[in-house]
Length: 185
Image (cartoon, one colour):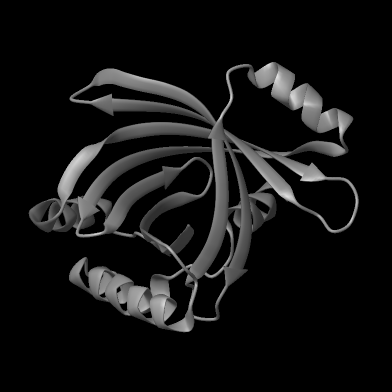
């Protein structure tokens, strides 16, 4: 499966939330802490371990530890296409030890608070990232990465951005890891 998404800076979070909630179904609040490990040798690869807590009406409804490996391609217009491999892990410390023993080292940590919505086949997330700011993420999962699929998804994503009054100039074309590393300097 392929994740096709875009992220954009959200400079009017309250207004955006009002707009999104007027047409999309609220799915809940998520607290996500991502710990990234990077391969020491070339080609550099990242593996993410996410600690995720899901809440609905202020009640914790689920907790899980998800490992994610992505093969990404970022297009000039900010659309990101990722082939994603994801699975749960029960012992995070054993997983970290394994990563270090096979040549990975700690890279960076990202904490984000997410209000998640569903609209058609799209997930819309209103995201606050610690030490970075507020974003809107719009994504869809598709069975392939053909040019036709990407084009169709891209058009729909841009329509949703427009519906949310988010200008295309707000699209962030860098990965979160790049932004976080730049913010640390």
